[in-house]
Image 1 (tube, rainbow, N blue to C red):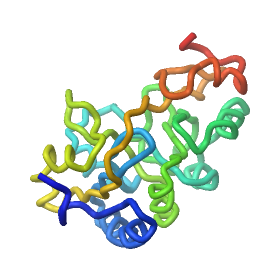
Image 2 (image 1 turned 30 degrees about the horizontal axis):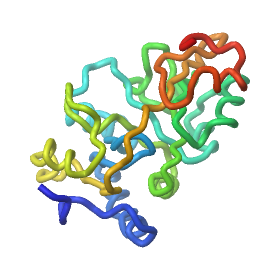
Image 3 (image 1 turned 120 degrees about the vertical axis):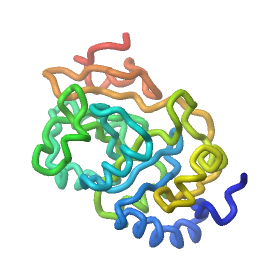
Length: 223
């Protein structure tokens, strides 16, 4: 199966501009988008409860397993009412936009509890993917994100994989695919818990702990 009309081109500047409206319409309907990121393809949409419920049902995600939020500007953190300890501010200043996910405290009145992780915080990354940044800015809010794959299957690196695995959901309109081409293999984002007194690596990834310690010397883990 090829992308064809089943996926919206999301590569050139003109294609991205043309894709913004149908992508926003999909999110307004509380449905799911598949989109390229700087690491793998992701599934996501609005952060409201109905959109999150649709994403949970579609992916068959276990309860209590949260989603990442992608942003495209520091003002979105304030809109979510998330707090950055000083060490998190330093990490963000050095590594955002980029493959660093920070688990932040706050957001009790702005973010559905289904998005809160076991650490008690909300996982956030400022994506460095230019086309996705444009979409998020047009949406004017964070979007949810989880890897675009079925359980036990590697995260999708191309639209073809998504179309093969999720054709019935696409046919129903629950899922709409933005085709950003085949992504280059890369390590996942490094995830750092910032809800405690010191930052702690909870998933090693693209940015080594030694590099993170240049701006957060008290970093725990991933030695």
